[in-house]
Amino acid sequence: MSPSWQSVKERSNPFTLRLIRWIALNMSRRFARLWLYPITLYFLLTSPEARFSSRNYLKRVPGQTGSVIGIAKHIHCFAATILDRVYFLTDQQNLFDIEINGRELIDEVVKQKTGCLLLGTHLGSFEALRCLAIIHDKLPLKIMIYQDHNAMISKALEELNPDITESVINLGDDQALLKMKESIDEGALIGMLGDRVTVGARQVTCQLLSDDVLMPAGPITCASILQVPVFLFFGVYKGGNRYSIYIEKLADSISAPRQDRDKVVAQYVQKYTDTLEAMIKRYPYNWFNFYDYWGDRNG
Image 1 (cartoon, one colour):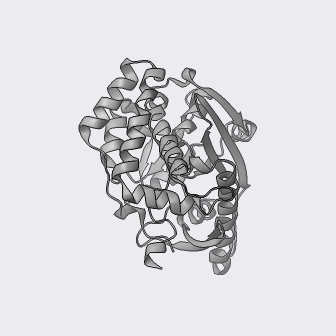
Image 2 (tube, one colour):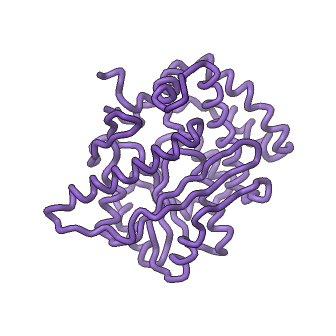
Image 3 (cartoon, helix red, strand yellow):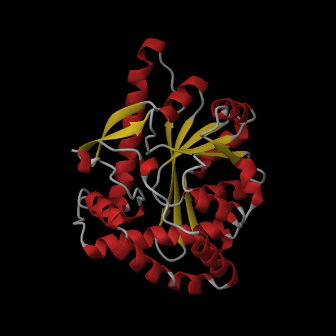
């Protein structure tokens, strides 16, 4: 079973982050992308955890073997999306060819001002979600994340666009659920990730790539309490400057008697996991959970 990702130490340093950020903002994207190759080689050679987790994941995906070449492609894809975060967060979406599938679903939510939960994963770029805010001028978009983890990267990226701070709800805040409800009542779209468990939080055992894995129950539980529509969001990186955004409806609302809530929540979490698995099989190098996700070292 999967251990907590929170135990994985951040491997970045301020100088490297500032250097990458400076290159991205002062050189062409084409030139900046040349740095992805030495960065990929560096992590391939110096991060046994990244190699193990990538191989352990890829060998579960049909058609993948977990070879060194596959691991290198996996790390390179991740590095590419990290670099592109700089451009997304500085509103340079014009640099990309972005296809949006399911945009009409969000259009309807915006029109009705009902608010919704956009449940994402660590597949592709979650920052691509900001493209929806660009399309809908002044769209009330809030992102729920744990700011304390990878704080160095978060701080470096927030410095690019100070307005981002106002759109973030820290899941480590005791008032996070209240802030989420207030935002929903205002018609906001709440974006959060749902494929990593945290210590002490409620969890659901699901099947992912033919094996048991722990998934958080929190996002679906919140949706059932607040009675809001739930959509799944994937911002897939397709190479070069191409991204595809996929939006799928999970439920108009999730309701169940209190005594059946755990069962209903578990069913929806598995449905979320099934959709994630389908996307993984289509875009195997896009899934970025570089830790012992299935807990094989503890098995």
